[in-house]
Length: 98
Image (tube, rainbow, N blue to C red):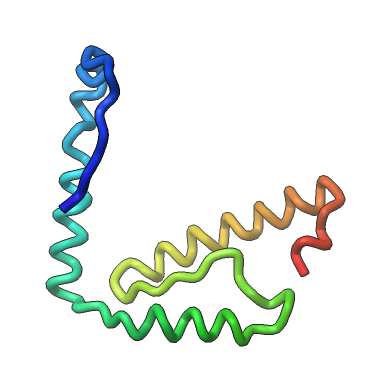
């Protein structure tokens, strides 16, 4: 069960009524995916161990452990990583990439 907190000004929520069901839709979709794919928690533990054992400078900015959406999420993360590297380099902080 998801818990959330509402703001004190209810009129603000009225402005967002069109998107108010998106969180529920997202949680329902995730629940359906989990019923179909049956993710294995061991995959997360294995990914953590792999990250820990990765040499300095070889750890990715983000790691995806998801058999159902992982491929397109990985592509998005790769694009973010490339732009992150450009930003760090532009500001003379490329040493943080190692």
